[in-house]
Image (cartoon, rainbow, N blue to C red; front, top):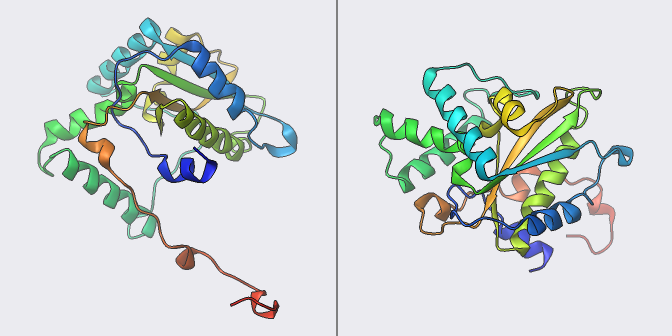
Length: 230
C-alpha cells in the first residue's frame, strides 16, 4: 500500500474485533510514526499504550463516571463549533450519517446514550494509544506536532491491517488514566487513538465521510503568469 492509497483508505473505525494486537506490532507502528515532523525537531510527544486489564479498568470507570454525570475535563485546548457555521454543519451531517447507519432515531435517547458511551470505552478496541506532552510546554504549542504524529500512527496502522479512531472521549476523565495507567501529573494528556482489527460487519464502519472540493477551499495566486498554467 503506497502513501496515497493509505491516505484515501484511512477512516475512523468505531467497532473493533476483540483480537489482541501483539506488542511488537504496536512498537513498530510507533517507531515509524515518530518520523513525524515537529517544530525545530522538538518531538513534544510521549505515549502510554494500554491493553488488557488496564484498558478494561479505564473503560469501566469511564462509563461509571459518565453515567453518574461526572463533569468531563480535557487537559488540552478545546473549543466548540459556532452554530450557523460550515463547521457545525459538517459535524451535524456526520452525526446524521452515523445515526442512519446505526438505526438510531432522533428521539431515542437510550440509543443515543449507548452510542456516546462507545467513545468512552474506546469503541471496544483491544488497545489504545494515549498521546501526551510535557507540562513544561504551553498548552497550544505542541498541538500541531501532536496532529502530525497522530496522522502517522493511523496511516502506518493500515500496513498491519489495523484500524484506528482518533478520539478525545477516552481522555475526558484524565484522572482515570492517571490512576489505572500510571500517567504522571507532569504530563498533559492530549489525545487517544483506539486501535485494533476493524469489525467490518459493524454498520458505522461502512461510513465514507465527505470532503469539500479543493477549489472551494483553496485560493491560487500568481499562476496565471507562469507559462503553461491553465
